[in-house]
Image 1 (tube, rainbow, N blue to C red):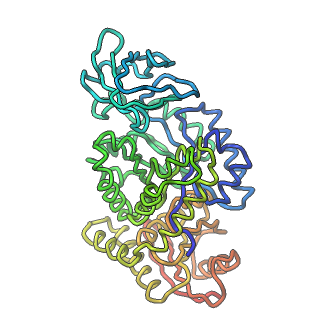
Image 2: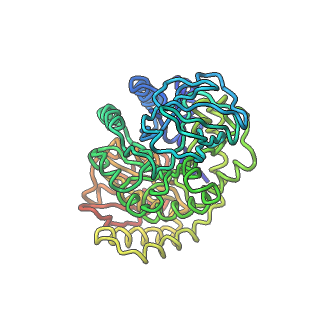
Length: 474
């Protein structure tokens, strides 16, 4: 079985040269994530162009996801050399200071002293270092290290989202976004989303004319407003680092399952992120626990799994992607496809979607049933926006989904959709003859063979998916 779960890899100093980018694509990278928290717009635009060039050279679509910083509170720079913060060590937090050392730590958030309280415990970065606010005096705060460890670069300082005075997206986010919308970016991740209103504030054109908006679930408010956020977004990222700081790490496994289930039920791709193969930043292989975590995320239904520092600054980014590809392919082979599809049909039957979605629900459920009973070789989906592809993908069919679209951006956005092989279509679907052309195109590309039976699913107009054919490949 070919791999169905997609891989998102973060591009950074360890992976942004052309040779490594090409190797990452060969190893299995489906989507390249470019973060704006640590780099200038010009630096990230240059990375963006390198990824596009590498994908063109490889002859396959690779989606690009821009991750906006959002109202992220970061420490002043420690530089590239780790600084050890031992348990019990006392230091001063200074808002507005752009650099840090072991005694005086800068914070790029002017309202810090208004938003934190004496006795607060704040996580640094992914939570490996935890500090306690001892007192607030004048223009600084005295703090102590509750749980020690090394700090380098400009890690985040987690402040409970309900205390933050900053809204998401920030004005800086919107200004940065403009440059990448002009460049034709495929997907945009929004940090610290708290409600559907935050997503609507972005103001870009709906996909596929604009980028697919990916809401990062990392706050208590986002969990409480999950239904509206899923409805307003194009996809969801479960950002387990800040989410664990907000709600407690014991809640993460249960929230991960619920968020994944609700996203897939709504036909929205979901990315599971944070510390997937954290040990591979410095080690040649992941731990057994990390492999089990990644496999369980796939068993939960994740559309994609994401590598962060493992590929951005790790010692061997290509090996990290290749290892994840092997783990994902093996987990895909053990996925309980029939039980998942039955569960999704039950969940959808309990909801009351609009009339267009009801038609699509009925057609995609019928397609899954017919494809399963007939044992078809592939489901050929033809969709301008990608809606039809994402709708059938939520059923997690055993056979591959060939996702045709006449829009280049839609093709790249479909790199995030589970089980989908994105293909550029020559035109729009307006007749049975057009559907036959797509079947021939799938055969010529080597996705199906003569004599195979395929299911062909398409939307011929409006918002719904309304045509299904079973056909033999000539």
